[in-house]
Amino acid sequence: MAHFTNRAASVSERVPRKANAALRKHPLADARGSVCLLVAAIAALCSCWLCGEQLPPARVGVYVWSGQAPGQAPAAHGELTAAAGEQRRFGFGAMRIFLGGRYDYLHPLRSPERFAGVARPLTLARILALPRFKSLLERPELRTLWLTAYPVFDYGQGPDEIDLRRPVSEAEWRREYDQLYEAAAWLYANFGGRDKVVLISNHEADEKLLEILNAGGAPELAVGNVARDLEVRFRAVSDARRKFPAARLKVLSGAEISLWKLKLAPAPGGKWVKAGQGWNALEAVLPRLSFDFVSFSAWEIVAQADVPAALRAALDDIGQRTGPRVSQAGKAFFGESHVLIGEFGFAREWKLPAGAPGAGIDAFLNAVERGHVPYAVYWQLYDNTEGEVKGFGLVDGAGRMTCSGVALFRRLRAAAPPAAQVSCAAK
Image 1 (cartoon, helix red, strand yellow):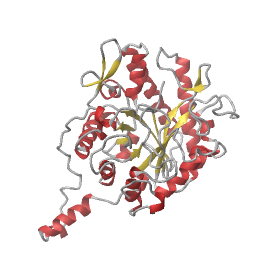
Image 2 (cartoon, rainbow, N blue to C red):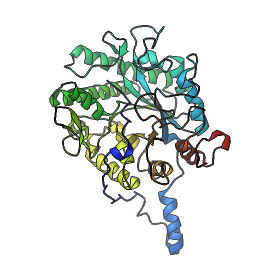
Image 3 (tube, helix red, strand yellow):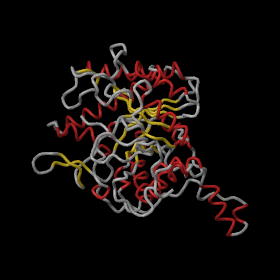
Image 4 (cartoon, rainbow, N blue to C red):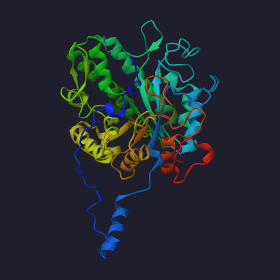
């Protein structure tokens, strides 16, 4: 089961499609201000003042996952410690990390040494209590921590996650619920008095469906297991939240998808692939659920010729189709904009058009700035360690900013980075 490694296709292979260019009007677009009515020239300026805001760093995040940290940070410190320094340098107010048994941020992915010395049974709450994880929540400048959480199971090969490729027992579902409930309760008990946000989600339900289908599972098993998995997650977090009604901390649970126009379909030979016809998690799984938010892993959008229009069309469509399933807690926190961008990014190996990756990054950050999307998370801080395409990082192996890093730094800091910190040719 390969998490987070499906980034190998070139941008041209991600099936670019023409998106609907009709953009929903901003909620303030029809506001009438007396100053705006003085003259036409001032009206345009006033409209910008009403509709736009400065980019809020608390709503822009970076993913940290099994990356090639500069110099391969020693195990005594680890990737999260190195990432915390980069978070401060760039000015990100949000960070997304993995929380589960496969990766401990000290050893390589699935290393036999992962979580060595940590008391068993290993649980999400015990992982959160480790200093390298807990310290992220203690950082005042990190306002939002997004946890891609997978309760810990061990099927004989070390800490892992629940196996959805076969029928799951009620005891396993109960164990998953208990771990997520315990983790959410731990967050409230230790940080309930802080004005922070913790988002908890899966990773790309469509990839999990594909994994089950290509392991020989029937569509009914794939949809049923993924839907039950997401239902258990939401129920556990919701139940824990009700136990802490006075908490200032916000803990919210969401469902992540990665396919919008693309579908899952069987190919000749029996293998399931992404195609133009078929079905996906948006159609088959999410209508069965309740959730606080929906996360869209937006790789289908970065391939589009007109990223801003495609992004807006996707946000509108996904939002409209999933809105009736949003919980009261989700509506209270997110309002009408409950669709988050869980991943977007640009690889240095891709043949990108002129102006990229800066123009593409701007499209996502502009959506945050204008209130069209509440959060956007860049994939990722460091280059991938797996997959054919690895160069997504904001920071290269020497610790200097790539072109993507420069683009994000300029927007978050409203300034150019020092030349000595930049490897990008377009400094």
